[in-house]
Image 1 (cartoon, rainbow, N blue to C red):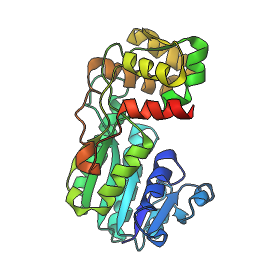
Image 2 (image 1 turned 45 degrees about the horizontal axis):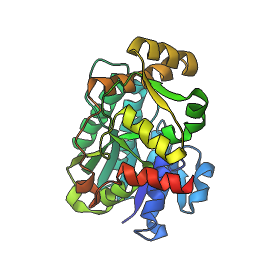
Image 3 (image 1 turned 90 degrees about the horizontal axis):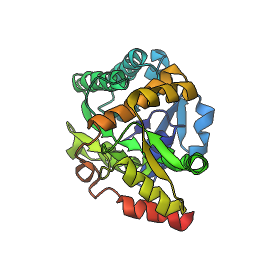
Length: 283
């Protein structure tokens, strides 16, 4: 069985390929990338895979049995059509199964809602494609908070508008493990899984970071309006609004989802106690 993984040069795509290399022969794994040279480090065959170009996708998916479609990062309306290019190319190329990396949450009235809505549309497009399918709804990556630790140290705090809402976090490596199973095992066909660990609050996240890095950070709850303004000033209107929308959703409870990780992966998600203890030992 030949497996193609899109956005192979990205964090999630490369993690999935590295996990698959532990499971199947290297010759059965093909990475797709907008710029193939950026994915050569993976040591597998890399083909052109820009979501905007249907002809390239048709060529690159020739001889592929299963496709892992990593959700794009463009604006919502563009993403729907880009994903449709992958779905159409997969079907026309004879692909038998497509696995999609979607996202958790409900379509509510936040600035992140259009992203969720576009993912739900892609889910529907996949379910009606005629191919076998499996869908993961990813939790929020916890890695950005780890990578941001120096800024947190400088500011002495974590500040956002999530308040005491619980969030379904996960890691790229845990997702890669689950997606490898979803790609390789037929029992996941027709299933949708929430892929995340135990939900935690921002105060719990702050406490974990303090233990892992020996810091004395505090959590500061901001209003949605103030946080949105601060993020837009720092990141620009589009990305700032998206980030504010994510934390507004956490505040509203839409990120407090039940995990299906064990059903997908065959084991429990790593506990946050173990994850942060590993960080502490390697800090």
